[in-house]
Length: 145
Image (cartoon, rainbow, N blue to C red; front, side, top):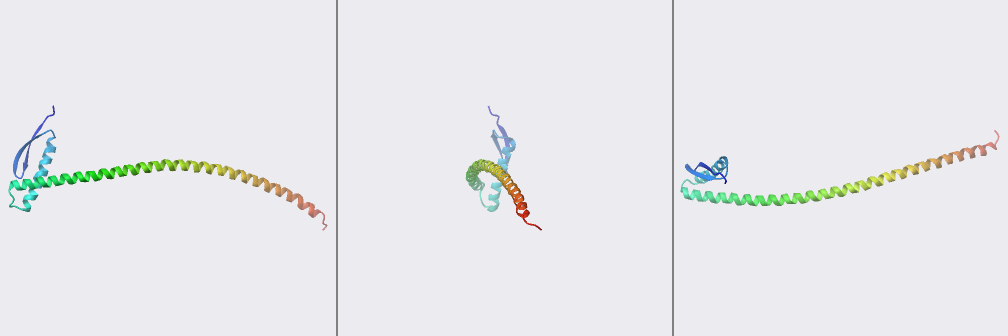
């Protein structure tokens, strides 16, 4: 069985005993909130009776409650949109990592191909230089100086 707390709170100068399952601190906080709201209303128009001030306080508290629920709903929708966006970004990240891996593999392959072509080009140049060296002395050797 849940233990109940009995707490005395003061609202608009009058003491009330409240019983509830919440902590003493929480019940005091609720009482203080109502007291402040009622004092705000009473200060705006000192001719209000206590019962009218209490009714207006109840209306203001209900207004606060409904606005809070509406804000909570908006925040939950924003949170859901952010979760969807996060999921989309995570999916895109996975896709980009896969694409990056394929590009890196292709880059490695192209670098190997380039190295082979450079080696072949070096062999062709060496071969041409050897041919050139053997041709130049033959053509020059026929001439006297």
